[in-house]
Image 1 (tube, rainbow, N blue to C red):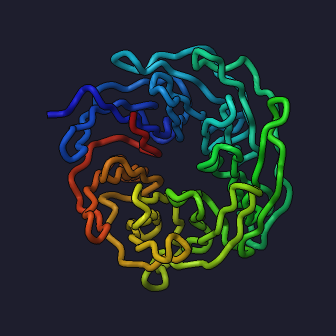
Image 2 (image 1 turned 90 degrees about the horizontal axis):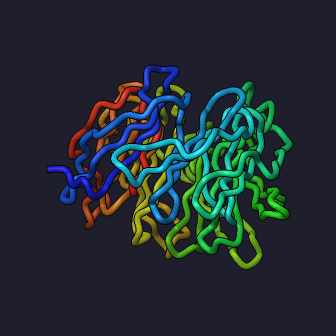
Length: 342
């Protein structure tokens, strides 16, 4: 029976038939999900983030004009906590950093900062925006900047933003509430970086590339805010039949394994992390349990995969010895896009 004390929140695309934000109970043994409620009203809440105390949930509205919203989640279902706040166009990711909510705005190629009040609610307007510049060789996907992911580094000193359009990762800080670029670090032209995960040691970062089905291993220097690409590893054992579209990435808490999702192949890839974090070895792939795995989340030895086009969330238990995911079950969530756990 599901444990009502622990919950998962699932984003979805309402324009594709999703219900908005879906709340599910998490079973204490095995991580199985049971749908509890659905909260509509916000268009296309494709990505979610929780406050450190677990009382407030933040969601992007991945629409052309772009917005973020806050919800109280200490009751039976999410309740809006204030009005929506406009950010850049087509926000695809968000995270908390330096007392602000940062959004990666794919459509406008920007990172936007919105102040977070002491009670977890959002200020009525953004406090600053960082506009990315540049392009890449892949047409038409890289004709302009496309910020796709933003998060703090493990030290909390920096925020890193991953840009698919410019083949680069930017390191930022906040100045008077505005994101300010500290440095920009190029990756291989045409790779199309999408998301990033840090090794739990904080010494390495792994960037999954959407336009080339690879992961780039980078050394991370938190003292100087410097990212150094070291190597690029394929997420597939052979050449894909067509465009592969890698999407999500997650590292195990013990730093021994890394997982990625690839939409065009409907698989999860499993890597052994070697050399203390500086090398990856592909162990194999397993079916993702649905179609078009948009995101994956690791929580307590369980992987959750949001399968957008098959409309479900599948969970896998991870074998401690080899890191291989074993399918546990799934629930129906139309147009699922991400999973976060309280």
